[in-house]
Amino acid sequence: MKEKLRKIINFLLGIPEKYPEVEESSFSITVLIPAYNEENNIAETIASVKRQNCSIERILVIDDCSHDRTGEVAEKAGAEVVRTPKNSGTKAQAQNFALPLIDTDITVTIDADTTITEDTIKNVLPFFSDQKVASVCGFIIPQKIKTIWEKSRFIEYLWGIYI
Image 1 (cartoon, one colour):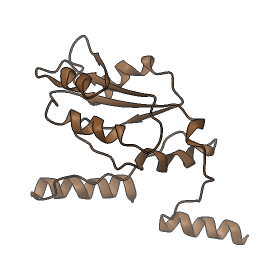
Image 2 (cartoon, rainbow, N blue to C red):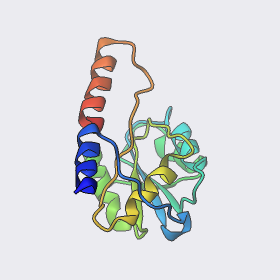
Image 3 (cartoon, helix red, strand yellow):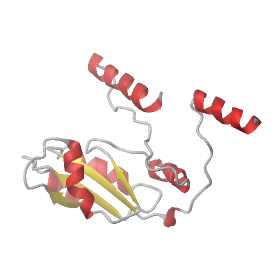
């Protein structure tokens, strides 16, 4: 009974359960990055993925028919690039285009203008030791929080992801 009460209190307070450590080599990982006109950001995003302190099998950029050099910059940065036949119109559709190309255990999706800390992916791996877990979301902090719109987006992230 005490254990059940502890779990309920932790859930209400947002305190996650402790999951056992897992060997990073027990999962193959692809990082999926949909991109549309992101030539100014994509290299930094890919570099942050390459700095991960766990093994990443593939970095796959979906160039959603960009009008700039997104695909070329991504390839030079070391990512594999696929291009949609026409602009899909949404990030989700671009991701869906690439899903049949993935054959790894875990797929990590990030935006083309996102940078992640070196331990981001390794920190989510223990959650996958639970057979009931199908998806994990990291905590997102916008790089810019100056304008009213940026502050609103930050509050949306706090509300939608953490709370």
